[in-house]
Amino acid sequence: MKKISILIPVYNAERFLDRCLGSILTQTYQNIEVLAVNDGSKDGSLELLKAYAARDSRIRIIDQANAGVAEARNVALANASGDYILFVDADDWIEADMAASLLELLEGAPDADIAVCAGDPAEHPGEAIHVADPKVEIWDPERQKREFLMHHRLQGMLWNKLIRASLFEGLTFDRTVGYGEDAQIMWKVLARCRNMVLTNQVYYHHVIEPTSISNQRFS
Image (cartoon, rainbow, N blue to C red; front, side, top):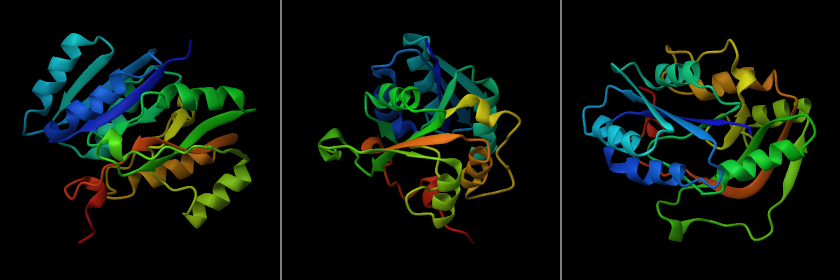
């Protein structure tokens, strides 16, 4: 049975962790490990993580001095033991069948290394979008790169993708990049990817928080 490593960089996310971890620990696919890297949080994030870990042995906490999201992801990757990697931001949440559904898509598609789903900004289940008639596509490497460069249907964020762990072998996030480090590594991952399977079904809820690192602008 394949294991999925769910990687969560955590920085001052106390307000959102219940929602995030609750959605992860209730996954219908249960062979998961959750690596939460506390990146020097100054609020109660670490204490909350410890409380969850005491109740669920699938959670592993790595506590470090603040080094940024890129290094937090590097540490999580270095400690992951799963066959597949799923990145989740601490202020987001996922559908209960996300892991199972994306893994099923991967295993049902020929030579597929990445499964991609749609996302929405819903804060609560009542706001979530559900597609009544979901579509599935399979893209070869040439199509993937073309779509990535067009930055429309395939973008650089990691949070809506289940990725074969071996694609990250020898790769690290660039700590010197303050924004877009996910797109940078995603391009390298695509260079190794065979086929990609995509669905327009929404399994990930990327909540738009003004203080989130993904919403900070360049100076």
